[in-house]
Structure formats: structure tokens, C-alpha cells
Image (cartoon, rainbow over the protein chains, first blue to last red):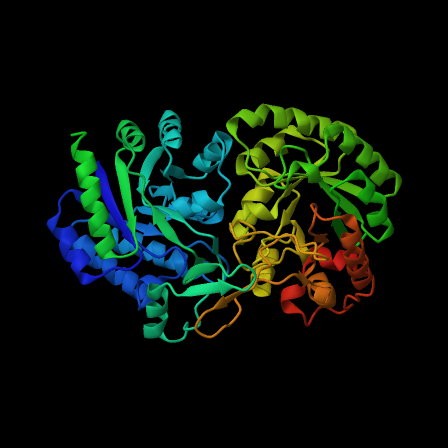
Length: 260
Length: 273
């Protein structure tokens, strides 16, 4: 089983840990919404991280952002071309059909994977849609439900099992935090998950950057892992930070050892 | 017709009052396959009646099939699509990539529109839809104006629709799970509760918006269709919004000389002047 780790924040200790663990094949770099949230230096720091993980022979999967508009597409595509040329990065998690088709045209040998955010937002409910996306370069899909795993295998799609399915009440195009112009405070605000209150029901809802009530849900059930083991060769462990990722990696090891 | 006011009907009885209020087109949901509850949707037979009412009043009828489509639903939806074309429905609104692709091949007369739920954010996506044979794109509600301009400049031959009243929300374009409450005298079903950050009590909620006051901007851009949301809402609440938007569009004056409007100068805008 190929294991990848995707965290909301990266840290030097994560790099050291992953270097020491040969069973971790690689990492996912890039934030769902805002690279400044994952890297205080934004895209430049993402590229620096790609260099560091490449140096320790780990595979990189680039997470492309939710909203790909004229405001960020050019920078994103220039970055992707650079990463392909300089670091031979070939795997991309995508969640926008236009971006899928564009990367597929520019980097024909790229492995394009429909990300879990894409699945949440993309209305991909049937195989007609999967086949359409396949025609435009999609090769894999991240899935968190056992029924989907076997279906993808049947249609020749590579499945990436999510360990840590992202859930949220909403994601916005505006950051719910107010510190966007201040790098340090900006990242802290994302980390502290401050609570909001609705006046009508007195109901609390957490804020995490662009997300309301964001959380990762982990399926440890035998049924899910039976299906993972039968139908796919890749697992992406999702977590908020390295500490949580470590905990979930240990869970994953305990689960997977029973199959090996 | 230069611009279209597209009004929602959750029942047959809503159609005539909406047309009288100025709707140029009506949209309804196909029972069982729209993203709204069944009681706000019309059966095939009702849609047949609705087509007759609309066409005899020189009004178009669009049908939304925008629920998540499962594999088991595909054959029945295709059969329904053929029935809708036979009835003379002017357009179907779809939100599923696979279904859009199949439908553009299946239907010969009925227009195919890409729903706002598809999440169109860039020109490349519009280009894919155009190549597929889609006639109209309903733009995502959370695009900035410069992004709309960029899309329309890159793909000027596509027909564009915006949500002009009701569901304008910077939360993820209706693909979210915030509680949806129907408020008294407020037809918006969206997440209208006001949320406040605890530390400074700044509201992060989303309010019901009408673009009537600023519709001129979108007319200048060349947006063709102006949608009012609210299929689940009693039509007595939709009628005044339809009147307001219709009046706003009627009173809009497109500048004859668009040479100074660098971004706004589009091929099909010239034709409409």
C-alpha cells in the first residue's frame, strides 16, 4: 500500500519523520484554499518544500485550490509547469474540470486525481461523469466510501483511499478570518479554530480560514479497510497538523498490518 | 428579446402571475430529479401543461434536472429528456458533467444549460462546455465581476446567465450544508442566519441580495439572462421581485459607444445595441 500524508500545515519535524519512514511514499503539498495558510511564504515556500521532499526521494502530489479563476489560474499553471520542469512533479489533486483539462493538455503524462474536495463539491455521482472526466485526463479519484472503491477499479480508475474524509458546513470564497494582510496572525487565526455564534439558535460553529466547521472524519471500520485493501493501492492520510497525522499514521499501521 | 428575466415556478398556478409580472422565461424542476423538494417540482404531465401556458404567452420554459444523478437514474432521465423535447420545452438545466455530455448528444431542439451548481469558475471550463454543445452557462454566484469579465472575454460566443436575485452567496455556491431556514416574507431558502465572530461580533453571514439596482453593470457586460431564485417559495413573494428586476432591465440603457469600455466590448453585445 502506498501511503501519502496531507496536512493543513507542514513543519520541519514532519519532513524528518517522513524521511525516516520508508513506508510513507510521499506527501501532498498545497492547500485546498490558500497556500498562505499552509506556507507563510505562499507559493514560493511550496516550491521550497517540493525541493526538500524531492531531496529525500519522496513523491510529491500537488493539491490545486478549490477556486481556479482568472485571479489565480495563471500563477497556478506557471507554478505547475515549473514544478514539472524542475522537479518532475507528475501527480496533481484537482477539483475543477477546467484545471483538469488544462494540466492534461500541458503535461500529458501527469497523473490527475479528483480530490476529496472535488468529490464533495463536484456532483460526480455517476459513471457517465467519471468517464467524461477520464476523457479529459482524469486517472484517479480520492474516495472515502467503500462502494466507490470497487466501482472505480472496475472502470480502470486508480483509487486513492482517504483516511480522514474532509467535512464542513461551508467553504467560502472569502476568508472568514480578518488577518489576511498579516502573515503571522493570519496563520494563527487559521490554527485557533475560533468559534462563531449564530444569533438565532445560539449555535456555535468553528471558523478555519475559508471553512466553517471543518473537520476530518476517520473510518476505522473493517468493511472500509477490507474494501481499501481489495480495490486500491494508495491511501492518503489527512490531518490538521503533523501531531494528528502521526497519530493517524499509527492507527493506519495497526489496521494495515492485519492485512499483510 | 435583449435580456431575459427568468423566474421560478414551484407550481402551475405561479406561471401566469410571473409572466404578468414581467418574466420572459419560467423555470421549473422535474419531479424527482431537481435539487429542490418534490413539492416544489412539476411532473412530466404538469410540465406539458406549463409549456402550453408559457408558449401561448410568448414565454420560454426551462426545466431543471439538477439533483445528483445516480447510475440507476440515467436511463429514466434520458427517457424524460426526450419527452421534454417532444413537449417543446425550450431548455433543460443540468448540473452533472456526464449528463450534460450525454444530453447534448441526445437532444436536437432543446437547449442545454449548465447549472450554477456545476461550479463554473474559469474560461477553460466554459470552453469545454461550448465544445460539448452546451448553449448557456449559469455563472457561479460567488464570482467577482472581473472574473466574469475574464470568462466572457475568453468565450464571447457562449450565452451567460447570472443569479440576479436571491441566491447570491459567497459561501460555496449552494454546495454547502449550513442550515437553511425559510423566513417569513423572505423567499430565500439560503443560509440566512447571521453568524458572528465571537471576538469582535463581525457578521460572517450571507444576506439576500437583489442586483436590480446594479443590473446596468451586467447588461453592459452582455449577460443575457437574469435568474430569480426561489422555486420553493410561494409565488406571491416572487412576483414583486420579478416586477422589480423586469423594470430595472427595461430602464437600463446600454451605452451606444462601447469603445471606452475595453472589457465590455463583446461581439454579441454590438448586435444587441
